Length: 392
Image (cartoon, rainbow, N blue to C red):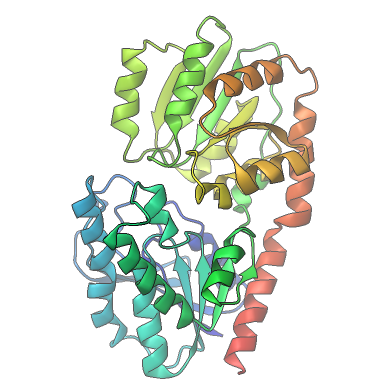
């Protein structure tokens, strides 16, 4: 098949869509990606991508980039970012090949990023698939917007119209189905998988060394890393417990200052690292951390890092609600406190530290991953859905 992928984010930005596209190419499909200038999560255009329009081939995937307003701090700048991709991409859509068999829309925030794919599909009479990773407009609520506000109601209307124009919606969390049912839209569950890099070269570690806890991912508002810092403050007297935080994002500078203010010598911020470094980093960890804000929407989400953590075969310690909590507990893959409950999180870290068979929880998670989040199953199911839509 000849597949057009529309995604506001793509390599070198750290999103799984890159691996999906490259795997589809290995399976014999031809893939073109329409995306923006890379700027996530720092909000500055990456070195080498300053041109407003570019086209390149990355690992046999054709990548067409359009101008975008960087994702800088502040609500106004964020709105400019949200509106800029569909605004500029609509011009590029007219210049793309007219013979794609299907359009695959990778829908993170914002929902507006789906519009160029819908426009191409309408103009060329092909079907669309939308892979929903962020539920709109609920994602705006997680960011602080009130449900009764005019802006929320506007985006609710826009979101419903966009979702209803899609031929097939796939969801990454079972909990999302409730919202789509309210909209009168059918949605099918297709959970994320982990990139292959997390499936090998992850070693067990010597229990005689410091108890090392690792967080890896975006350091933003919804990730609630302040919960981790508060837990670290509770555990400052435990000299062998170390928190290593990898990643960057909108809250990075604020949290580093907070760490310094509280004099948390047990917390180290490493910044963003290449995904190829993660096996080495995970090998140093006794356990991996996942946290989110205490929010109704966020309790419905399943962060992609959970699949990576499980694939690596490492125990998980979380402060998180809803579907993620249920999965970790069902898999017997670790310990989970309520979202933002830093005191219980600290208690669970001590419990993990004192468990001589902690590694068994990681093995449980790996077994659960193999049964429920297998990459081969994901790609086969996705390709089958694409073929079925192409034959309609």
